[in-house]
Image 1: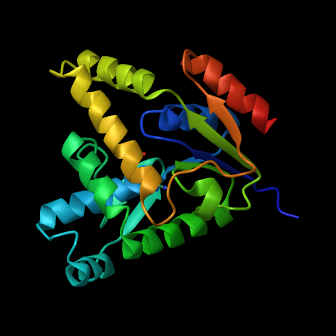
Image 2: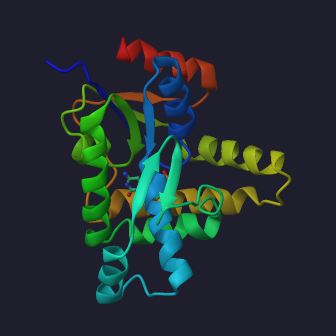
Length: 216
Ligand code: DC
């Protein structure tokens, strides 16, 4: 028997999945895979190459010539670290668009599944417990109210010195929830066997401990 284990974390945008997953990975000494960063990298490449994401032929051609990897916590697009450039609002929206496309999902899910066979990992996204790692040993559905998620994002951006509008952030979060939950392919939903953790009103350390309790 191998002693590899997989932790799947799903939930809506801004629920704190990556912050929590990163911290839990560090405490357990396992790898963290941010699948959202992979969709963002594809969104970034679509934007950069100026192709229409609805042009199936152009998208297929681009994907055939695209290499996405996630190593040592870095997202690599065609061998280049794109960690800094994929976090803009524009790329968030494009990632949401390309993540609804079948060939994009097929390519990325295949890469993600392969990652889950090599070593113990914690992987976060939207369809990890329901699709990518259906047989993960642990599944957590991390959520929080849209208002709280918008509030966290607002504070994060203000801290970075960015000029932001709370109502716009809330609207974008609701739009992305709608896109992610209603798309035809692998929409965001809680796996039947996932433990739901509503983090509204909880601090980061509290959420980390709640996840560690589930995994123990
Ligand atoms: O978690 P994130 O905001 O970085 O994700 C970017 C986009 O990718 C988001 O719109 C949802 C989508 N996504 C997905 O469809 N499936 C995943 N496993 C991860 C992200």
